[in-house]
Structure formats: structure tokens, C-alpha cells
Image 1 (tube, rainbow, N blue to C red):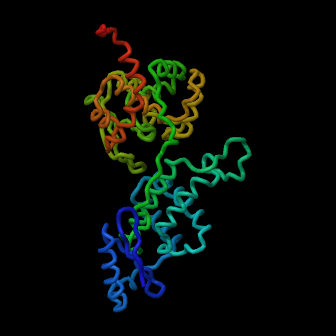
Image 2: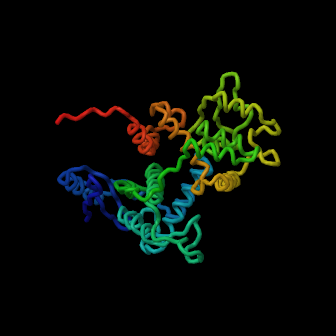
Image 3: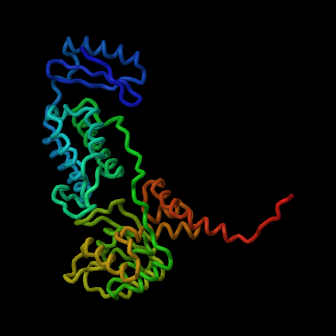
Length: 366
């Protein structure tokens, strides 16, 4: 005998034949789901469902296949993020003794995982909490935006399992994400802070941070920028795929302002990279971040810890100068304008200060 279960807005049929489990989304109607279950039970008796031929695989073996598929089709950084997210899920699965096969993972399993991630101790940079001795370096529960990314990863993985016919339906379907109220506000620099930062830069770093602030390029886009990506005649920067690197948002072109063109054109061409390290190779991203933190402190900017903040600065400064959202979206290389809208929320205080400058004060009638 089987039963029907509701997940989100839909009813599912759930039944076993021997040791095989069969799950299928039916309808938003409970009555239709009940009728469908009876039909499935009859077919199960006649062995007409075809699920007895469904492929079996352990959860860990399928994870290996998923990561291999990701490494073929995605950027290395994406696969690394997937691997980190799934590692956390596998740690949780070790506490669930009933989960061995891929098919053992249920909607309830993922809901339990979501709650578990919000309660277990978490340390920064993936360190093991039990090995961290610094006070305050360990907190209870992962940030909501972190858990949401991990849920998205699991959904991606289980959708592939359905596509490859390991599962009839994804157990992650209908799992709701958390409200990300604990996400950090995006940091962007004021005009004065930009000026102080660039003045504090040594000559070898000023062109780098000047370019980031004035183009909104992603860190990886700048680090992998080559001289043949610059078209000084057309005044554009071409972000394009390389044999060793794939752009996060695909290929695009960024307008090159006169100021940035002058800065870039004055640089020595010591390598095929525009901003090489001492060996002529692409700069290391973590090294660049450490230099930014050091320079920012020298400029009395103590909360600037990520190179990506300069990209936030570019978008926020454009919006504060009245540039429309679709234009900012295109300049930033956002595929969805919802992402660009995030920056519009950062400029509320600036807009409030602007309207306060109005001098017209009508006399209210008595």
C-alpha cells in the first residue's frame, strides 16, 4: 500500500514495491492524488510502472558523478563551491543512519538538514570549530544566505539525478529558502574614500584599483585581462573566454572611459597580462585582496576587506548620479535586473540627503 504526501502546493504519490520506492508528483488536488495512487497501486501489482528497472546508486557515488559533471561544464570556482556545499550535506547525512542510497534522501531529510545547518557550530573559512581557539571565531549556525546557496546546490544536483533517471522526482522540490536577514550590507566607497584609497596606493597598485572603481569589473575579469582584450580605438574592454578561464557571466564588452584608457595605455607591456605579477603571470586574487586591506588601512578605511566592494562602488556611484537601472545592469554584466536592484537599496541615504537640500518651503495655510 502507498500513501499520498503534500509538498508545497502539490500532492505526491509515495509507495514501495518490495525494496523499491516510487514517488511521483500528481496534482494540487488531493482527490486527484488519491485516484492516481489507486491507479499506481494497480499498476504496481501488474509490474507496469517500469521503476524496477530504475538505476540504483549510493549517495556518495552520485555526488562524485555530479561533481565530475560540474567540473566539465562549469568554472572551477563553481565546482569548488558546489563541493563545499555538498560536503556539509554529507556531514549531516552521517547523522542520518537510514540514508545510504540516493533514493533514501527525502523531502524531510533536506528540511532536517536546513534546520541542522542553523544550529551546528560554524567557524570562518571552513575551519573545524573544535580546532578554533580564538574567542568569537565560532558562531552557532550558518548564515541564511549560505544555507540558501547550499539548498540551491542540492536542488541542482537532484534535478540532474532525475534527468539521469536515478530518481523519479527531486526530494528538494518544494523546499523553501530561508529569509536572508542576516546577510552583510554591501560596502561601497564614497567619493572621498575613493580619493583617499587611490592616494594611499603605491604606483604599482593605483592603476589596478583605479580600473576596478571606474569599470566595475569583477576581480577575476581584471586578473585575467590581457592586452589583446583592450580595444583603444573602439574604447572597449572585451571580457572573453580563455583556454584557462571562463567568465562568470559570459562574454561582454565594457566601455572604456578616457580616464581609464589613459591609465591603461601608460602601463608597461611586460607580459600578455595587463596586470601581471613579478613572473609575468596573472596576479593572485588573495594577494590582491591583502594589498587592498593594507592600503585601505593606510587610508583610514578600516572596513574594506573585499576587492568586490570596488565593484559595488561602481554600481552605487552610477545610481547615485542618476544612471538608470537597465544601463547599470548592462555595465555590470548582470543577467537579471533583480541583482542590480540590490544596489538601488544602498543609495537610500544619499537620496534622502539630496531631497533635504531643497530650499523651497511653502507656507502652510492656517
